[in-house]
Image (cartoon, rainbow, N blue to C red):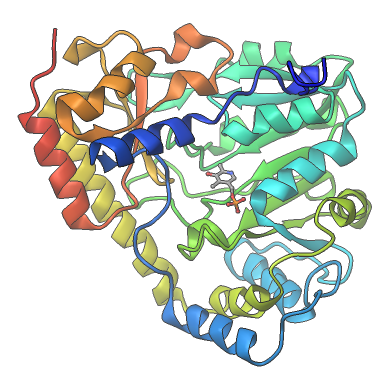
Length: 395
Ligand SMILES: *Cc1c(COP(=O)(O)O)cnc(C)c1O
């Protein structure tokens, strides 16, 4: 009994993540890995130097529970500077082990077993597991590609997802994997439902600085909408903005009672994290506007490079208005099932992608879609584009 399946029932639906399978496939076949979204270049040198200094200068013990004061001040300053949001570094900001821990700790802090979490699918892979760990139930609302190439949801479907058991809304915008940036009308509907049902929102904004110049809308933090600051836990992280996904330095900001609840859980998950990296992230957050503008422009050029390659290869692509990702429809290439397609793609074309159906409860909605990342060096993207264009897809 102990050895047959020791795993708790609520976690059994979660196997090895698709990223592990696809990355192993990339290594085994020598394929270009456009599966997992991690950059292949380093972040700002000022940040790396500050981390090296902190290591050498003895910042190697437990930092304060909520994070070092200079990082919390930098997080507050950054949100004021870019979004006009005011947070008190003492009590309204908590540093976490990446956005992932902030999300898990928020769910564990706020959900009783059986509570429902409204989220959008395809969802980021840790959401479903985090909700399950809390004993809560996910109520996904499906994002579908519209005729304009943007993903959208049905307003009635969102309304129907709310009910007496709704405990919170978990929103990711800019959205991984679709590249969707939620617009003001969509956010206004979400905000009004949060208020009608008197529930908090947890927002995952790790791509807050990855919205492209041709996007329909700029990034709008949900907390900036009327009545929402007081009920929103706003989550971000250094990983995506400063190309240091291995550092796992994230943070959550919100009204003191909500942040205090998350802190209560975080202190028993990891207690504290990333001591010597915290001063370095404080330096990075304070970089000038040219860093942020350059970072976004660089990714936009990379997006265009990959988008051109995918179209040349025969995929139909959806608009990517932000994030590190483009989703593509495999139907024009004779594909029907994204999992089969992605398992065969390294042999057919020498490229690895990720099937997005694994991020849906409604598998049919995502069966024909796969996700490519473009946060790679131009020569890597060019090589992938060439391989895809030259590949012969079995029809
Ligand atoms: C990468 C990512 C995260 C995880 O961020 P970490 O800081 O690495 O934990 C969370 N949400 C989304 C949507 C992501 O793409």
